[in-house]
Image 1 (cartoon, rainbow, N blue to C red):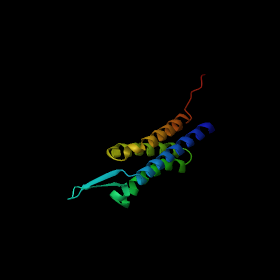
Image 2: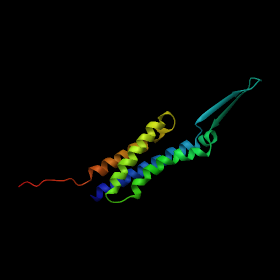
Image 3: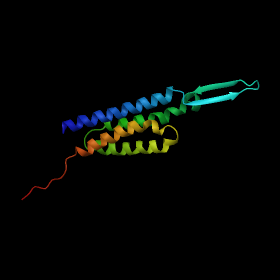
Image 4: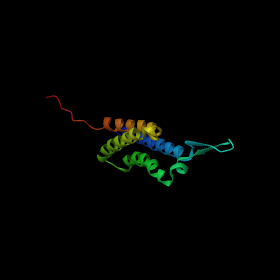
Length: 132
């Protein structure tokens, strides 16, 4: 049982790490290009990051996947499996809804979160009947 817990923790930490990397990339790397042609025929090209394009409000959607992947590590006991399932489903919804823009960046984090849930569910004790 201890081995399953360690494996689940590693996968959940991997999910958090992947969500942090995706959010960092989306925050710092230019994701939008603006081209402007002036009257003299000169073209001005700007490469903008999401905070430059959207403003500080972009922090909220960038924090959501990090919070969702961190919550299962903050819970203990029986509630942890339920929290893991709910937060992984919410992350899947975030990836799906955001798939037109930033959602696909979080697909690796979702994969690791699903792996953590799978290990978590697989390690639960099951009801077994004893033969008579």
